[in-house]
Length: 214
Ligand code: ADP
Ligand code: MG
Image 1 (tube, rainbow, N blue to C red):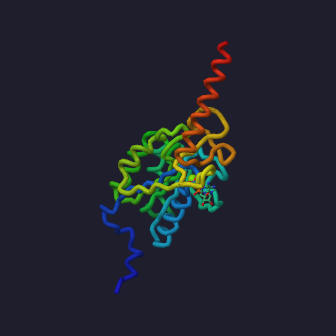
Image 2 (tube, rainbow, N blue to C red):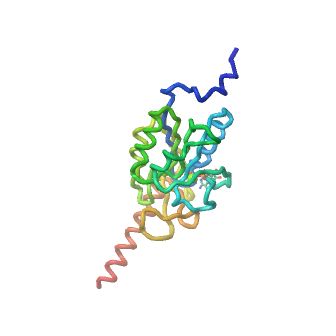
Image 3 (tube, rainbow, N blue to C red):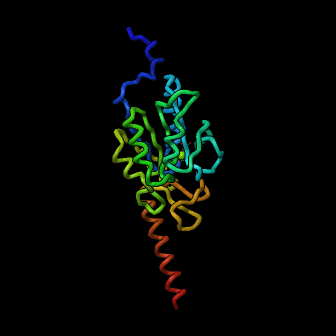
């Protein structure tokens, strides 16, 4: 028989349980849903859990993590990665689970901060875009992916083909890597649709450049 009482004794979680999990994929792939699901389960297990998001993410709500399906949970908001180290108290207890959304928006210290927390014995779950809209690795996600014990790659549904989408294609806005937006600005695409749209864009840019130089 299992002794279910032991589940409440989580503050004695032995050192060595610490781990880093990364959930990644394009926009609309369900990263936030998956992060919230893991947070909910940790709370069911009575593990003191903090949910954190960067101050730059002002979509929907200031101090809530909200998914595209409008599921929401209260979160702490930090401006720098190091602030996470001072945001670990939950109802007078020290967090054992730290969940971080929109990891790609954080500064370069995030992988070291997550590693440090995992080394201290905390379970760290990070969700973020693995690629930016140009198809290049986003921010400190590559280091996080390498450091993680467990990586979950999710896919959205390609709006052109219905296939598994791995890319976030920007359909409006400028050329800055970070530009907040929703379906008005980004659509998930599978590889060949993404490659086709990007090369069409490149061609029309070249045409415009050659016209304006005449
Ligand atoms: P992410 O955090 O990866 O951007 P969310 O977890 O916030 O994604 O939202 C995922 C939800 O988005 C899905 O459950 C689905 O209801 C909705 N959704 C809207 N458009 C799409 C799409 N093209 N592909 C997949 N899911 C989509
Ligand atoms: Mg999200």
